[in-house]
Length: 73
Image (cartoon, rainbow, N blue to C red):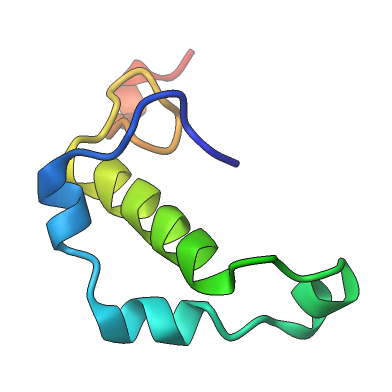
């Protein structure tokens, strides 16, 4: 899943070459699905988007927001 906005420079700076190389190694499921034309570019995009969610979490996103038990119904 990709986001609609590009990751910030701060998020991109957190993505290391080693992380990209490791993530570019396709899992068996990814290989079976046809892989990628540019696995390293795809890996970099995935990692940058993940870093963006860590650096700038969306409080309205169920995965990004930190809620307390008092916030539930």
